[in-house]
Length: 255
View 1 (cartoon, rainbow, N blue to C red):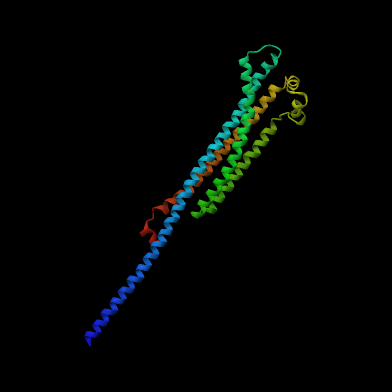
View 2 (view 1 turned 90 degrees about the vertical axis):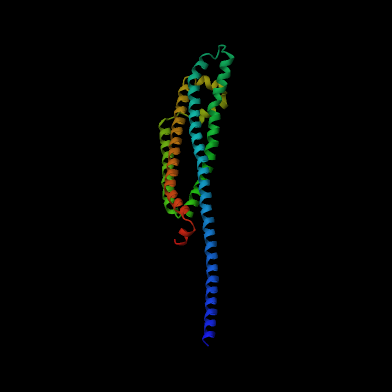
């Protein structure tokens, strides 16, 4: 009898161990799959951060190029302001062919630079939109969305402030350009227009250069505002990223 009880006890012990092993295996597999999911989540975080940095560098370059191009526009207007009096004084005289080639080049500088500035501005706006989406995506992954939105609102307010200041500073220049002035070259011809405005054109060119300098200065301010947003963003997310990346399976298991 005791021998039968012993065999039954042994059988039940084996069954218990088997059940524990089976349940433990299922539990371990489940935990392992969950950890793999966690690793995939960390991969998404790293991937998004790389995308943030690449897009930020692209936007930074566009903004810097925009600032430099606005300075090119200002430089072009200043060069015209310096050369125009000489050209008007010698209009009935023979001037060297090299000089006319030179004037032909500098006459195109503001126009070409303005076209480039328009293109860069459009590309920068598109880039900023994409960057802000990436900023928000990563902030959501790391549970920092609210903090990022606060920073984003401050960034938008600072950018809008530069736009308002730019308009006020340009308005203070009182540049004497109206529809009649702009349409005169087309109505009466470039030569007649230049002769009629010979005394005022150099000063007007200087004022245009001042306006473009104001715009360039504001573009530089925007560059610095963008830089501050990125630095604040990094300070916010990097500690959180490092904390999550350090944890291995055992550490993750007990969190």
